[in-house]
Length: 141
Image: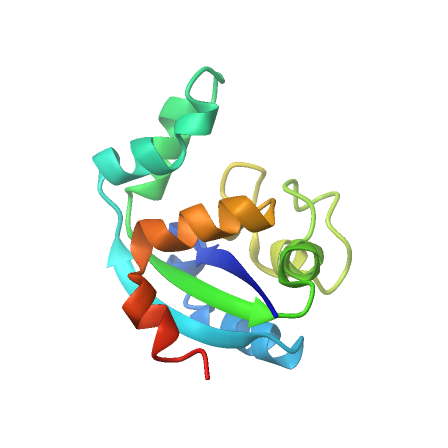
């Protein structure tokens, strides 16, 4: 089994579609190992998205991610990273496939409803940013 990290971003939380997105995850065969609603601080958003620090959208991304509550989720499934990336769809909702999270719930490339890890390694790093190993282990069996 492979694990990955998912996040329902502030725009989707404001739209009150958390339940629909979680249902899409479970219907796609994911096991939820951890889920919590948090308000990400600017400092946390800066650290979490540090890989984008030199990109022109970084400041807007940090502001957006700290603009309201998000839901962070640890997921498990065979081929979890690739399958979740398929489920969320392209970054730009205009380019996302029908039935994906971003096609259904995102309003723009910047406010795109969901985050998903892009590799198994980043999934581990991103999950550890918000969950302790004990929190995940308690639900892994």
